[in-house]
Length: 335
Ligand code: NAD
Image 1: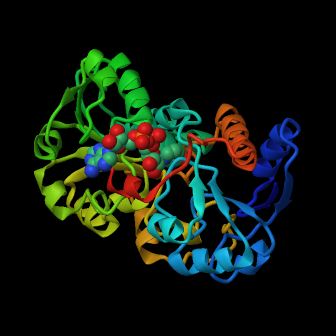
Image 2 (image 1 turned 180 degrees about the vertical axis):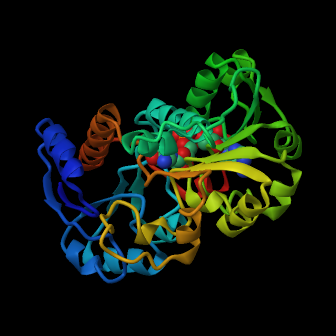
């Protein structure tokens, strides 16, 4: 198939080209995000390959349809950036990579928790400057703490196994409890009691209309003072302004995030010579107890290999007219 690949970075190209030796698709790589200003690049391509910050709004999809696009392949698990209802009305097929390496994201979540708790981000800089003072680096044991997990699908389950290994008590909330989680001792509860009882709250649900700003000022009010909040799901699951307010008051004791509501204008680019225009993000950067990574939780060799292989298989199956198990439809946004 002739495929236009958007938001291409060197690593995407490397892993997609390696996997394509087994598939033989005709891929053309574009660096820009797919937006209403760049849809013309996709003209004449039957298939597109897009990533988390490509915006497939109803208008973008209509333009793509007029240009001949039939298939949109997300090279990620999340699908909040695609108007699935519009895609369905236009008769366009949308596929994704539902599971490439849940462990990659779960392990990064654990890395964020350990780092922000034991202040590794601060200790690293101090030691390099010859400052061996321990003032301000006090952490807490994870052992015997309560971890609350919102969303216990593949990543939430992988994360539950890790924190169970640390000796944590694990609570969870998910409209569809996962029996595998229950089998390792995870206890399902309603959000209110999860908020009240958890020392660490980690988000692993998709971004949907129901989960947008799931962590808002009302939810934060119910949490323990000094709670650690961790988000490796999608930025808009938390209301960042409410979280900043709670960081200032001390209600939230630590924040570790790999995703941010307005990350589309920031993440995946080297902006080190530019002035950050997003004042909310800039404020987050000022807190000593906030650790931010730029949407890198998925970024392991195993995950990139798996993403590339599944994405290209999705094209191959579609081209051969076979049933693709990775199709994502409008009813999924109500998950
Ligand atoms: P999954 O579909 O296996 O699991 C998601 C779980 O969330 C499901 O069990 C679902 O029932 C639950 N859920 C849905 N609505 C909920 C709600 N209102 N409250 C609580 N739980 C709810 O997905 P996954 O593979 O575990 O991925 C989860 C999310 O992680 C993805 O949607 C994506 O946004 C994010 N993600 C981030 C990265 C990264 O690099 N930071 C990488 C992959 C995925």
